[in-house]
Structure formats: C-alpha cells, structure tokens
Amino acid sequence: MISVKDLNKVYENGSIAVHALKSVNLEVKEGEFMAITGPSGSGKSTFMNVIGCLDGATSGIYILDDEKIEDLPDNELAEIRNRKIGFVFQSFNLIPRTSALKNVELPMMYAGISGRVRKQKALEALEKVGLGDRVEHKPNELSGGQKQRVAIARALVNNPAIILADEPTGNLDSKSTQEVMDLFKKLNEEGVTILIVTHEQEIAEQTNRIISFLDGEIIMDKIIEKEKLEK
Ligand code: ADP
Ligand code: ADP
Image (cartoon, rainbow, N blue to C red; front, side, top):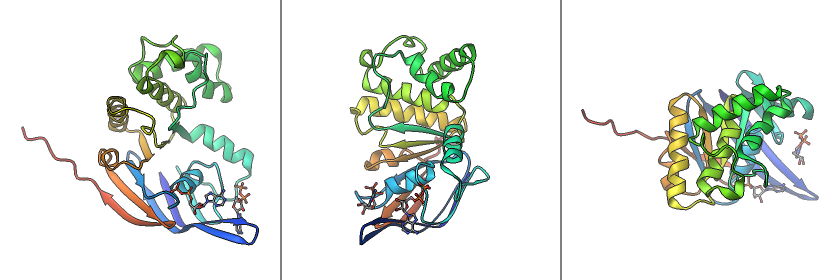
C-alpha cells in the first residue's frame, strides 16, 4: 500500500538547512492500523505531509497504491490526494453552520459526483460512523466525539486507499477519545488502512503497529500482539 525508500526531506531557510527526514524506509501493507509517535520536532508532520501528497520529498522513492508519487506536478498530486487519501485532523476542520450531511458531501463535490449520489453516499458514511440520526445537525450542535466521527465519515466517503489522522483525539475528552478509537478499530477490521499520529502511548497501543521517529529517523517499529480471547 505504502512503500517508502531512502526518503529525505531537507528544509532550506536561507543558509540554514534542516534535515527533517533522514533516509527513511517503511513498508505499510493494506489493512494495517499504525501509530506514528515521537517527540515534537522529530519529523512526524513532515512524514505525514509527504505520505499525504501535501509536500514533496527532497529525495527518495514513495509509492502509494502502486503509483509512483515523486516527480508528479502539483495538479496530479492534488488529484491523487483527493482520490486516495482521507484526512482527519485534530481540530476536525468541519465547515461551521453547515450540516453534517453537507460536510460529508464536500469531497465528492470536488470529485464531480452528482447531487443525488453525493447525498446517498454521505448518508451511508454517516450511518457507518453511527450518526445516522444526526445528519442535519451542525458542528456546534454535536459533541467533540461526534464532530470527529463526521470528519471520519468525510474522510471515508471517496473510498480512499488510506486514512491519515493527525492527533485525531488531541482535542477530545477520554470518553470521546475511546469512541473515536473504537470507530477506527471497527473500520480497520472492515479492511481500511489507517495511520495515526499521536503523542499518547495509550492511543498508540490500540493500533496494530507503532513506529517512532527521533531526529528524522525511524528508531522503533513494533508490532502490537493483541491478546487472543480465550473461549
Ligand atoms: P513533528 O511533527 O514530529 O513535531 P516536524 O516534521 O514538524 O516534526 O519537524 C521536523 C523538523 O523540521 C523540525 O526540526 C522542524 O523545526 C523542521 N521543520 C518543519 N517544517 C519546517 C519548515 N516548513 N521549514 C523549516 N523547517 C521545518
Ligand atoms: P513540491 O513540488 O512537491 O512542492 P518542491 O520541489 O517545491 O516540492 O520542494 C518542497 C520543499 O522541499 C521546498 O520547501 C524546498 O525548500 C525543499 N526542497 C526541494 N528540493 C530541495 C533540495 N534539492 N534541497 C533542499 N531542499 C529542497
């Protein structure tokens, strides 16, 4: 699903160069549920920006779902981003004063899908995240956990190859955090590939694999063994 080889990212600010990613190698298979951890400044956001086709690497190879991403012009990157990636943000990024339904329809408007199909798919996505009874609610009429579930429905609606979530529980209380993590787990069990950036160990341990960045390098890559329930 994701194949990254010898990826480097250098930010040049005048005479100062910051080597934000240093020869990063990573393979992520379809259906993985992975956490990306590491201290502030370790390169997590830079890595997610490259994986999310928001920014190019300085050198290296990045293949997403059999497509070679490097060297693509911005318009093609944007097209791949819309088609293959569902983004979830810490601050939800919902449009205020606009119903959950219309928020979820938005990515399909960019994709040029007809109004009738948009509405039907948005309703299905909201059903899937457990908000079938809240479709006409506006963001300020929803709890934090519900807002994030609307954002997850929006991320899912174009059937992306991967979901990228940047600190998705960072603005949520513990109950809403668990609500969102349970939803991610359910979606992953249905086959959705999910990468989440998190500072919280408890969140990371609910995934199936944890990688950890330090100073632009992956210093840990650990598979989480889930306890098998005894019959
Ligand atoms: P994290 O997400 O783990 O906090 P970042 O990817 O944001 O880490 O940052 C990695 C390094 O790259 C840091 O040293 C940061 O200061 C630097 N950096 C990030 N973005 C830029 C930028 N646009 N210009 C210059 N340096 C940057
Ligand atoms: P894109 O076309 O994807 O926007 P760019 O070529 O504009 O990618 O590069 C994105 C960032 O990487 C820029 O901020 C730029 O400063 C940095 N960058 C690109 N190439 C190099 C390089 N050879 N050396 C150092 N930094 C680079």
